Length: 569
Image (cartoon, rainbow, N blue to C red; front, side):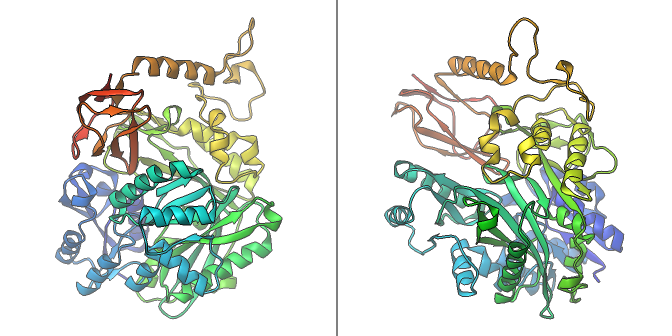
């Protein structure tokens, strides 16, 4: 086993890796940007080293600098976490050249699965079912549009190097295709350095089910059961659970076998996840499943797998990277109870989930719940990185027990000082349809109004009896209830009327594109400016037809929240 490793990541996953290393007696080296100088993971590591300014391209994506720190500190291996360099084959090769172990798969396996189009072709050859679509080399708009016509709308445009919900757009009709293609290509270039895309048939009623797998360098491969990640918003996972509710045993076995087959087809080693999309249009009993992609790294949602198996997946990663064989065969992998994870973000559900920044004046998690957190009370959430505050993981003997545990945990969680999605998560955990297992990836979109209604400021006792005092519907004696949604709608009418001629930054961020110049004539909803913050790209559009009479946005410059970027007369 290693004596010292470097963690080439930040935030919650860095803290998570540090905990396992501390238990195993392994020293840890953290690397950090200037913005993260006082971050929780920096404080928890045995030693920490500055590697550059806040932008990830100048710090966490500087593989050469990170390897130099590893050599200087005597780290024998580098754990890349997830995101950043975790699926970068060139970085894995550079580690090997430097005599440092990369805690992950071989570069050839990363390359085989890094580009979604090539991965789909490989899976087809291995006999794994794939989603109908286009994953060819030609990338001109005419070819891609022709492919979308052949597949039939709606389609999904996906960045070939994408992940984490980035670089993905649903297109419902042909007229929207050019704009959404450009948006997807731009996000792919910005987030992954690759503008290429593929086109897939959009499955109307999908569930997102993925298989956790592990393989060692001795030819062994096993799966650690499945996770259901269907509760998503804009293709970003919100709630994950294991095992998948209502999944027939035959499908569970078939998906597990397909995942292991995929891993063996590319000579995989380490932790990986095969993501499948399940077509629920005919119900779960008659559903078909298709390969979507493989993530050649640990996943954000890995704690629910740990909860149902009792295993430490980071420890397995370390042992496999050190050359050890997998500790269990397939029939020895446990499956105990049910686990659910909720992601707590610094964002505002009542205003289209805009990212939020600020200092956490209060952060409290209830006892008896696993909380994998990136920050502690008093820490700041900055504009530069992912807005995740923590993941709350609850385990129970069955799904009902786990759901009630999650609901209770969320009600007793406190996150104050900035806007969060805590109320949104509480409403999901309390939702009757969700608790009944009636879920697919469109669940949040269909029920968005009721799920984003403001949560009461006062504490609601668990299992309290029905009462107007425990009701968020605006109870009043002389008139029908005044819904919080109605109030919010009225406020947003007022906002649009006031800001009608101005284009305002809804969040602090980086200006990555300006599509107009002063004096240009624009149509209503014409794209003007693209902002990027916390891994999100947002296109700001003209609120009305007119002329650009003021322009304060410059590509490459940071702007503050509520800054007026343009005026339309």
